Image 1 (spheres, rainbow, N blue to C red):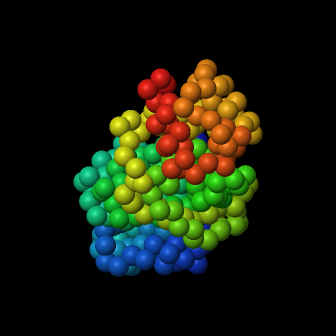
Image 2 (image 1 turned 45 degrees about the vertical axis):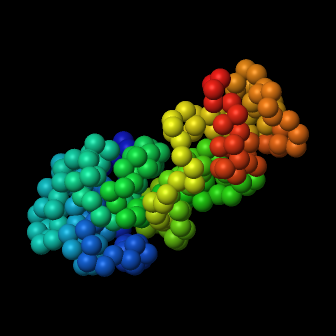
Image 3 (image 1 turned 90 degrees about the horizontal axis):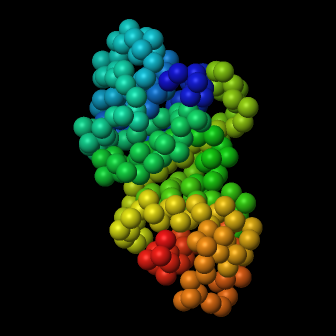
Amino acid sequence: MPRRLGQHFLNSLHIAKRIVEFAEINNESVIEIGAGKGMLTREIAKRAKIVYAIEIDQKYAEMLRDKSLPNVQVINADFLETDLSLYKGSIVIGNIPYGITTRIVEKLAQEKEYFKKAVLTLQKEYGERILARPGSTNYSSITCYANYYFKVLKGFSIKPKFFTPAPRVDSLVVCLVPHKPPFFLNDELQFFNFIKGLFRYRRKTLKNALIHHLGYLPEELNGEILSRRPQELELEEFYKLYCKTEVRI
């Protein structure tokens, strides 16, 4: 992917092997996001039935084709514009450019029925956010979003020296396994915008956060919950709160 997207290429065969082992590929089809120079692609190909190596940069796409890996199909395209329904049942693997991480996670959430799991190498801070628990410093709206659609599993950290150019921070490998959402939403966008709005006031009490975000305090709410802070609420608690406010949002 273009350098402007914040892509850092893996330069360690050992780390590539660890990622593939964590992904537990067993003769399945694999979609690789941003194959780049092919360090990870080659290791994936050893265990996959077929690898769809998606690379937006034409130069790197041509380099991959020149490697003539028999079970690798190089696709010169933008992953964000790729229809995952064309690759049903695949495993997704990718070293994600920091600049578009949220857009990729959102795409995977919206097309989660088309793949088994997604093994992603993320900026460590971002990975810790989607793995966070309520009440922790890293807990945020993206935590709630990711955990609504996926079971999030922690892999391992990677030091900057294992990438070229070296990023300024560590990376973290995680696995997103699609699961049935804990509750049904008529309007998912509205619900997560509601959560985002409250997290803007994460250090305020929920009473004040609601007043700031909604412009009013729902009459049905009272008691202990109003003295808590948004960063302390479980996903299901946000949902119960939303159900009491959504008519007027």
